[in-house]
Amino acid sequence: MVTGETPENTYGNTHEDAYDGERPLAAAPATPAEWGALIGEWDEIRQGYHLGDSRARVLECAHRLQASVAAGGPDTALWTLGLVLTGPHVLYADPDPAAEARVREAMSAVARALGRTPCAHAAHPCDDVVADDDLDGLPAVLEMLARPGRPATDADPADGGPRSDDEPAESWFGDRMTREVWACPGNLAGFARSFPG
Image 1: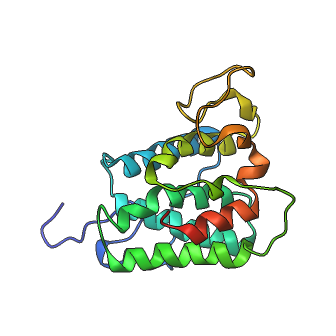
Image 2: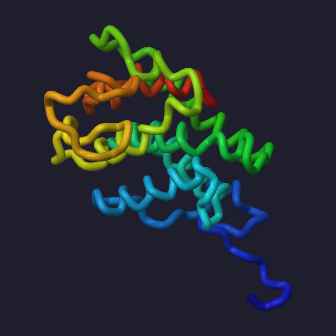
Image 3: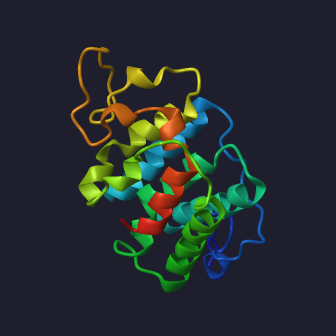
């Protein structure tokens, strides 16, 4: 980089304007493989070993979530749960008041837009999340949501690997490992309301 040149981050902006939602973003994931790569980055951010600009990645997720909620987009569940996974980074690991405000604003938009949608589910996964350790299986849930052709029972969220139909999941995900329950507006709004969970 040339001296005096302003570095760009992965959000597509310079560090000085990283919170400017007016700037265009790179194309959103369109294939399961692209979603898989992004979900891997989100998990790295949560685990604390992401080598890229983690704050910018979190802000990108918040920006895309707000846009998806406003448009009633089909990927709202992925962006919401992605922010559940990564959002605490800007609260605790790399505190930044402006970034925190953006994340909380995006989660508030989810709670407002989806919180009053009726559903027939007696319970949701968001009802049982009490600690950060409970989110260890969330990348497997995101992978399930990103791969609509893959049966939900093929993955055990506890380890991300295959399990047989006779083998119970040993996690709070239990029998709620279905796209319908995870993508339910009530579940997404519940996670948003309890953020940072």
